[in-house]
Each structure stands twice: as structure tokens, then as C-alpha cells.
Length: 82
Image (cartoon, rainbow, N blue to C red; front, side, top):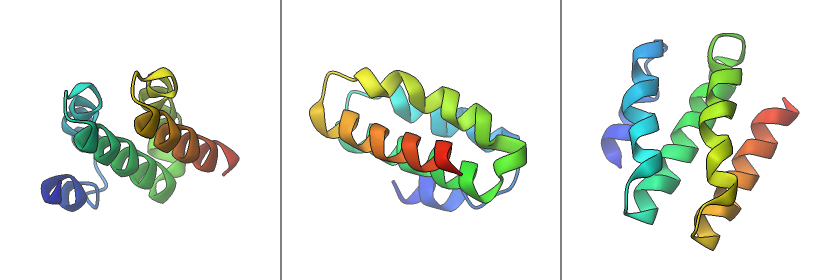
């Protein structure tokens, strides 16, 4: 989780792949970390990464876990509203 926080500060598209891999992890905390990290990098670099981050987060709107769905809905909406 700390690594995700650190790499999301790198303004380069190469960080999207490792962050997006968290979205399919069996651990729900790591899925949430992936959502939050992608949303934050999407907000920080909206023109460059915003749409791609939205598309990566979108499938988690129907995640099997309620906490993950709630988190995805929050961050998806926040990023989309920008």
C-alpha cells in the first residue's frame, strides 16, 4: 500500500499498469488502494490520465465487496465531476 502511494506521485503513464493490477487483487484493501491511487493520479494529471483512470476504476463499481463498490463509486464520481 505504501508503494502504491509512492508511485502515484510519479507523473508518468507507466505507473498506471502496476496500480491497475491492484484492482483485481483478492485483498479488498489492496483493491481500494488501487482505486484511490488511480483516482488521485487521475485528478493530479487530469488531461493526461483522467479518462484512462476512470475506465480502470469503472469495473469496480460492481465489485463483489460492498466496501470496494462504495469506494469505487466515491472516487469514480469525484474524478468524473472534475
